Amino acid sequence: MLKPYIALFAQLLFGWGIGANYEAPSPAPQGGSGTPSNAAYLAAGLSIASWFIIPLFGAIGGVFIARSELSKIDRGQSPEAGRIFAQIGWYVGLANLVLSVVGLCGGLALWFGLFALIMGGAAVGAAGQ
Image 1 (tube, rainbow, N blue to C red):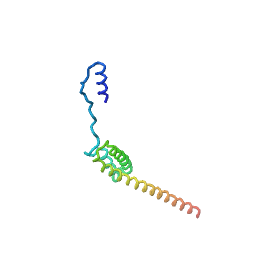
Image 2: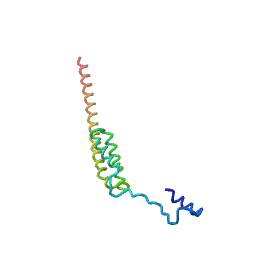
Image 3: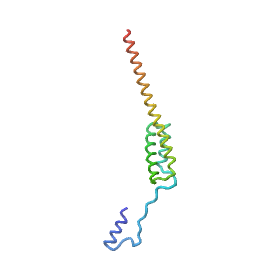
Image 4: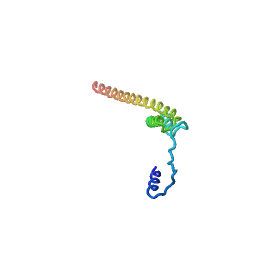
């Protein structure tokens, strides 16, 4: 990154350097069509695994990585070929998150409802004796 500036400074100061027709290398293009990036594969893999192996944490990781990868694809920093894998990761992970939160709330409501029912029944039974 600093090599062109150092070479220019050396040429101006000492009169020696790489040469008059030296051209700094251009960065390799990141976007375009090609193979999907590893982050797109990871997002889809985590989101799919969240249904079988790692329920809540896989979905959270898959959703965040998928959103990040979709933004990079939109900016042209990642290959367009990874869009479908990132979208799979986004939608599958989001569906798992929504169902996990609904199931967690329903389970907590059931737990506390049964607890209240048992405690209420115990209080009525104790008052009746």
